[in-house]
Length: 258
Image (cartoon, rainbow, N blue to C red; front, top):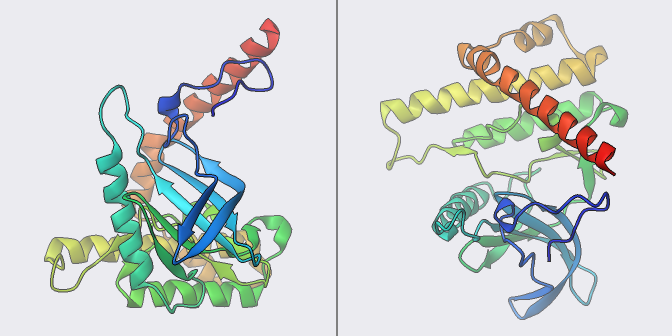
């Protein structure tokens, strides 16, 4: 159920959430094992993700893509398509250190993977040379299997594991160059561009979070922005700033009403 927010503002309409008013299931069964909801990590427009545990204390993550209609238009087809894409990439990357173990499919728009304890990467964690060496190997392993992660622009998309190692757990918009199926010249060009972006963001994060571990070449690569990134910033940065101003005014106006 979607509840009214604590500051007495009305909750967003159900269409703002991937599952509408339903929310994540309280429990589910997978391979004769029953898992019960322990915590909701996230429920936004595209997906809902939650932490579950079985009777033995094993923790897993269930992710459900969108099923709730949008302005009356069915959306489960889109959620199923995105889930199929992400499941295929998860399976393609199994065995790589830094990618959680895929555990199974749930319904038409969901899947389950092992839980990796950790936090979103941030400066307070003081990642060192070993962390970035592991992250470099992780990206290299992804690219070797023809997958570009794509979503590396935000460091929050990189998990700093409780063991001090990096993990990638969200492949929703990752790009997979499937050999023999869609490895046309255009697909190969797109893949190479996206791999370049992965490395650019890797060096950007490394030079900002662990500059003491960086070489001159690392700093040079962190400045090697492609035309795509420059164009993206030119177009979307003003829109992002406008959105932030709108949200700030929205919160201020509702605070004054109270």
